[in-house]
Length: 259
Image 1 (cartoon, one colour):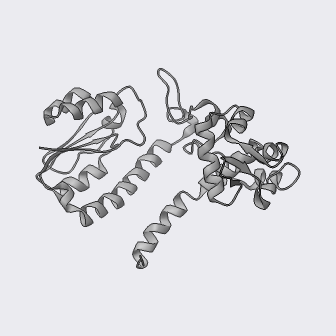
Image 2 (cartoon, helix red, strand yellow):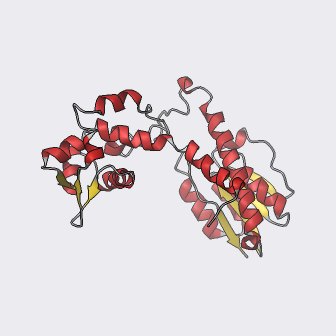
Image 3 (spheres, helix red, strand yellow):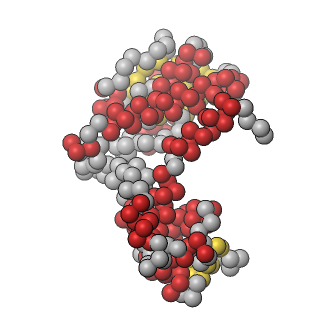
């Protein structure tokens, strides 16, 4: 498929936005001394052995290794062993590892890719029950606004593409609920394009309290799962209710109901 200039630009923007991930994962592998462990095992190590040595769940570690292999760091054999290569050896202690630690990106708060997160499964941007998080820390500054603005920009671009290229998806749909929809940008785009659709943006009370009015006669906000009954969809209400205990639903799917 050959993309025109506009399509290529839209594809490139994601590379710029998420370009930090490669450096972050590589830097984390250096912090974990993965290459040193592979070399210590004769240049080849199984996932279970690597997991035990690093005290990291195998499932978490498998994803990191898959990412590294995709970028040419390490190889994977047919018997599920990871082997070193010329590029991975550069990250060994005494080679270029110190240089990578100096020039690699600092651990981004929202990346979830640090040795501590891999070991514990707990991310600093996710608020535990009755606990503090980086969103409420005064030192975190205006990151909540930055996050909201970023999600609106993302929703504006992606939703407009869905509306333009797949309008049939909404044929016969009467109600749409955006679960974890922040200030309702995606929902607003849909309501404007399909004025007969009734929309509800569901999010945390503090998010809803700061949200501007939604465009459209049938669009509204809610932070109470029981208000979902107004859409005559028990299954949708239960989906929203199941999300209620989570205090920071960052990536929640939109729910679409057909009647």
